[in-house]
Image (cartoon, rainbow, N blue to C red; front, side, top):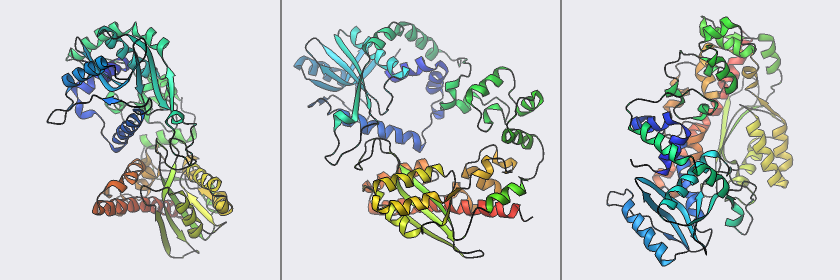
Amino acid sequence: MYLSKTSYVRVWSCRKGAWITQNHPELVLQDENTLARFRTGNEVGDLARGLFGPFVNVTALKEDGSLDLPRMIENTREEMERGTSVICEASFSYEGLYCAVDLLRRNEDGWAIYEVKSSSDGLQDKYIADVSYQKYVLEHCGVNVTGVFLVCIDTSYVLGPEGLDLNGFFQINDLWEQASREQQNVPEILRTAEQVLASDQEPHMELAEGCKDCVYFQYCTRDLPSPNVFELYRLAMKKKLEYYQQGLVSFEELEKAGVIKNVVQKRQVDFALRERGTYADVNEIREFLSGLTYPLYFLDFETMQPAIPFCVGTHPFAQIPFQYSLHYIEHEGGELKHREFLAESGTDPRRAIAEALCRDIPANVCVTAFNKAFECTRLKELAATFPDLSEHLLAIEANIVDLLTPFQKGMYYNKEMGGSFSIKSVLPAICPGDPELDYRGLEGVHNGSEAMSVFPRIQSMPPEEQAKARENLLAYCRLDTLAMVKVWEALKKAVTI
């Protein structure tokens, strides 16, 4: 059996997930979100190599670009015999068990393992399983392991004008005791791994609370009726599992049992089971619309969350706005107009976007956003960063109305929303079949995750690709605010029919 530390952790975490990964690799999610996490992990890992001064990286590649594991193992042995202080990707193999240690650091008595994660939580159980496996393999290879540490990101760190301080950015957690305890379970997990990965039969696993974030959740629930309990709007996973374990899976079963009390959830179930038109509470919608005044603005931000901060005064994973779209109507019956902003990739965009907002949105006008907490928070952050613009920015923030409210509070619903009130669910439900309003027809950027990933990479693209990527970003953000206009129009129509 060949088993890497990644495969080991998969088995430790979920036998079924490990089996699916091996036997159905086509189901392994490779969307832009996943690829962005890989890129972030590589960037943080590369940065951590300089944490303890000079180092030697023993990575070796074959002609086809794949890792040359035997060469890496031999390179590791040679560097250890030389007494190299820090070895990156130090590689070991024991009876088919393989691992590469992110940082192997020599000390007076032996060697310490440092595992690097682009996370802010250094005490996750899966990390302890990871380092315990490494400790097990190294000790069986005859290495005197004297320490086990996990290097993660300290989100309280704030980038100063002097540049990035590795010792401040990284947080080192001593996991010796946890890894030593967990190491006792390694032999049993290895036996499980051998049985599971050698089997032709998919192992059975009961659904659990952690399944909600698993990439295989849709696969594991593929045989359930649709819609089902796991699709209920804003119901905690713990409660969904409680119903599921009681045999209340389909919407018919849930309705018959009478367990759904939330008004919006009850409407979701009712509309899914029966032919219903659009539900609209005319009085409540009219009251909501009465709070919107002209000139009327529709605002949407796009942001990035760099793990490694590059804007002075920001912390890791801070939301940095780099783009906005703004549709607006100056008076009743007026022409729909549009303005937009997109920063230069590779620069700190905050001052430029703050100035553009103050230029494009007058103070104290009515501004709408969809799920306004996001836009409001970004505006308050910009105001705190630029005191000379704070009065205007805070005036914009104070006058934002949330277009999500009529849907979230059950004022408006139709079956096609499927219990989701994101703009990408609401728009096709109220404007079905319009190709100009179809996010799937966009090129390159179809959602916020893709926008967040594409923008920072523009700086490294050839000029033609840069221009195309910027065009794609603008088209995506423009559709977001046009969608808001269509939502507003649908609400107005609902009270005039």
